[in-house]
Image 1 (cartoon, rainbow over the protein chains, first blue to last red):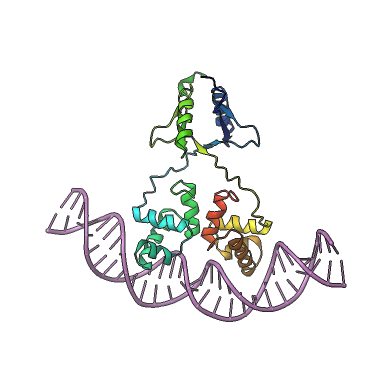
Image 2 (cartoon, chains in turn yellow, purple, green, cyan):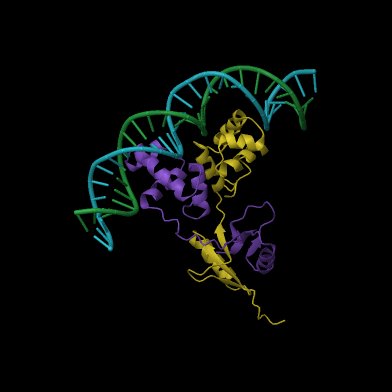
Length: 123
Length: 123
DNA sequence: GGGAGGACTGGCCACCCGGCCAGTTTCGCA
DNA sequence: TGCGAAACTGGCCGGGTGGCCAGTCCTCCC
């Protein structure tokens, strides 16, 4: 069938590491049906670095901590989280405390930022 | 040098759109020197969707607000921000208030999350 | 010269946050 | 069967946060 519909995928490279970026550009540049985005062009998808700094899973958050963390990322207060999860504010504080500890954060804002950086949560 | 170090690039697909993900998987699956990551495998880079929310600067934050925002994302308290920027805590609160307003956030955590989502700051 | 906006500062105050102490139940596992 | 981990709850309290009021300096622009 003729490819007049040309479902060509435009990919952007967003890689800091020059070496890796170069290799990717070389490899991806020769793939039919795929094109690297021109500077400033709007791409359909991007290739981003998945840096090797402490990958998740070694953080080991409990399910409940994940619940609390997700609501924290929404900007919810302890009171709101308590209401949402049907637990007391004290319990929320308990989980928040564990999160600050495990994520090595100084406060809830820092905790959310750290978690997002490590891919534990998605903003 | 010989290629015993096998510089094979491991790519992860993090695309929500099933159609796009499928096409990418097909295209990228046949590229020599490149491999798609197995589920759970640590990838060197990821292919992510470049959603159309082009993050325009319609938010219009002042330079000072950006300064404060950046430090907020680091988990800094108002006091720390004041010290860092050599201004009073009151002024920091003033800027934080403007930030909450402009970013439509309920608190500093929410503000940082919103800003990160819109690409105003990088975590 | 007068207005508008930005940056900056102060006081005051209700509320929230995080850390400390203490306790309970439930569950899985050795 | 006992023991640890997880989840849950309470009181207390110092300090942080955010919203309100007020004001002073600038600079840019009509």
